[in-house]
Amino acid sequence: MIQMSEDTQRYSINVSLLLFLLGFLLMLSIMLIFDGLMAYQADTLRSIMEMVAGIAGIGFVGYNIRKVQLRFSSLGKPPSAPRVLTSESCTKCDYSNVRPFKEGDYMYEKSGPCPKCNTQDSIVIKAIFLQSPPKG
Amino acid sequence: MREIEFALGRLLLMKEEAKKITLERFKKYNPQTDPTPFIERMMDYFTLDPVSLDPAGIVQKWDHLVKITDNRMRSEVEAAVATAPVQNRRNLAMVLEISSELNFWYKMIKHYHILGKKTGNPILIFQLQAILPDVLMQADARMGGLYAFAYGHPIGDGIGELVAAQLIYPDEAYNIAQDMVCVEKEIQSRKVTILKCEGPGGTVGYPGDAVQAVMNQKNFDLVVTIDALVKLEGEKSGTMIEATGAAIGGIGTERYKIEEIVSKKQVTMYAVFIEMSYKECITPLTETLFKSAEKATERVKQIISEKVPVGGNALVVGVGNTVGVK
Image (cartoon, rainbow over all chains, first blue to last red; front, side, top):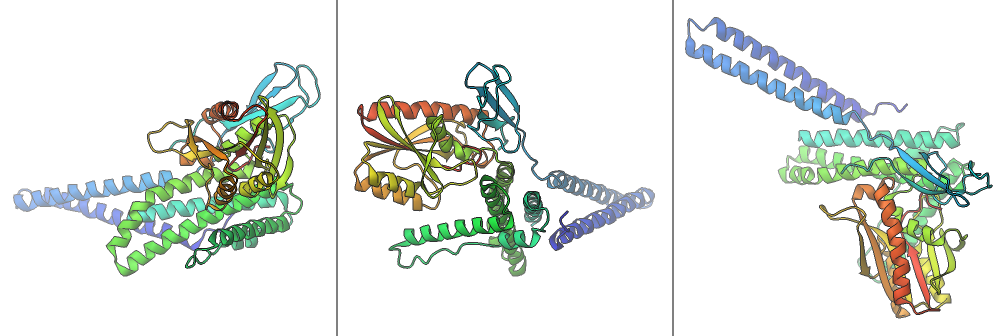
């Protein structure tokens, strides 16, 4: 395993700091809404302003948490190894087969005897291709 | 600014994944030695551009530098994994090259991000933000290419090589220049010389040197080059298009050599391209592209029968990276 680099650590610290600030803002927003509800009878205008500010704060926190979540869902996955197929056929009979790619396969390689007609070295790899085409 | 930080995080992730795969591949062939210092050293290795203040002779300078870099990479890989077969060593050299590119992009984006923050220059930040989607797309494609070279899958860029291999099969080719092989065979009563890179290890070879070598020995009526072409957005992958000239990319040294000898000998030169996206170019071949290669092979035969007189000579050059293709 590779040691986590200084940059990765710094990036994690930045995200942790952001989440801490969002948590703080969420608490502040809840407090504003609570305070607004309590002060509704005494000062209606102040109460409405506090509640609007609190709701806006919660919305802002939610939006940012969703953004971080979306980033991590794509950031956390490096592109994975693709599924590749090998298509081989016999040069002497009509035998053909498509199987998963094995390391060492290459196009126009003689890959052994034919399981159907038993001719030595008659199986040739004619194609190697992706199971599903790449996106983008 | 956060978009740039996200892109940096993504590039960092890809760079480290590439390094991890490179390490694993080197360890597979040499489990006794820790390849980390070697890989870290090679990931920072680069080639200096030659001075172009006086452009006369710049192609020769570039050609020399490209060959030195290529030979250096190969000798370093050979020293690190001496027991690995030649084709695997070539693939490992390509894996190392991709890791090095990802490392370079990460360093460059980080540099401009820090510089933008330090100077508070919004123009710098906007420019960086404008190129980020393209950088991320290319880095993503490079990761696909990394897996292809690590395991030896044929890639989209090797479609020209595949067409040449389809024309060559079942004959055996012989060496004509560094990393280049040649076959002479008769197709529809015309003598056809086919050139391609020596496979199945990952290499683009030196088609220019091979073309010069065969054209200095023999006269040809027609030269056909086949290569992959990055399609424009909205175009269909696998579309075959034809052109006049040499179908060969890269920095231009090989194309220069081909154009020089072809124009000196006044030979007709056609190009056949198969269009694909940038990602398809460096990731494993798709079934659509494979079918297009078969169509291109038939088209090349048709061009030869139409443009070369019976008994005449034609030269067919497969261009691209021959990884996974014999």
